[in-house]
Length: 399
Ligand code: GLY
Image (cartoon, rainbow, N blue to C red; front, side, top):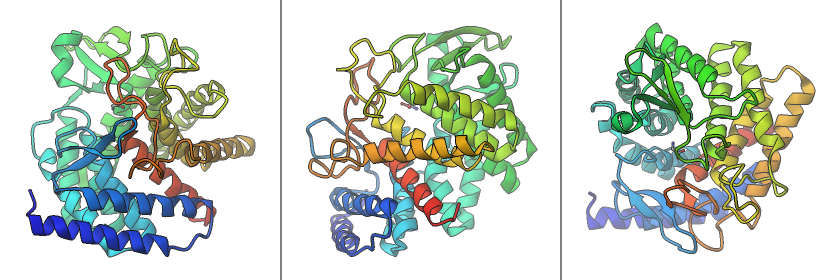
């Protein structure tokens, strides 16, 4: 917990950043939306009461964040957003904030693994921090985090256990499609002294998931439950989607991003082809306004809530996929689809500018249990700023 005077300094720094944001140059479309992110984040930063308060959600119609601490699965997204703000502005005030919030997550790397989310928590925070600063202290935390994540790997099932706390309830070793995102931490560690074992684990996880998590039309199940001892598939089901047989919008987005990163890290063209198939079905089934409903088969479409987070994750993944596709028409298609998603997200309907300090409105966290529906959520904002950063780099020929 920080003191009252350091709380005031957070406020002053936030105000300074807001003023700086107003003077930023607008050189292209991505820049103007990044300027918007800077201005919004400055308002968030000014209101945060302590470094143990991570902004997570703003409920529909509200204008204040609900805060969580570093143990929450979303704790890496605010520090990650701060790193992207620093990358864009080069302003050391953002860097200092990014460092401070990143440091609060350190215990996760050195504690018993609670679940697979270590990857989200540490790669978005420390990973971006290391990428931008090369700070060797970050490196040792990330290597420890990868080893901690690796303790959840079951070599018989061939995947990482996503939810240790659900083994009893679900009846076995469980893996969720979201877990594809956490392979990035293992690949990073393998390249940075963590050993081949982590690379092999990531590849085995992705291959097993490719086999068991997808239907013949390339839509994905959210959860696969494996027999912990034999590794055999017991059940394919949903948790956050509408039904076991439907396409949960964010789950499929994690799959698109996950197999895109698999190709980046391995250069195995199987993953590129797979990422394209997983993306194509998601894009083909989008509704008219270009932003998915929380589940593509929600029964109350067109009144069903949207999920802006799924759109932001997919936009970011498609920008990378557009640089990988060997077919020029496909590359153009993914780039245009990513830009269309970002244009829709950047409209008055989806930007939060008149309502709250978040970047985006209309994300859905967990519809079946009634939480975070049609809300602002920190991971929607994180992938939105990541996608804008990637678009800017592409526009400037830096990717
Ligand atoms: N990883 C949890 C979610 O996507 O809601």
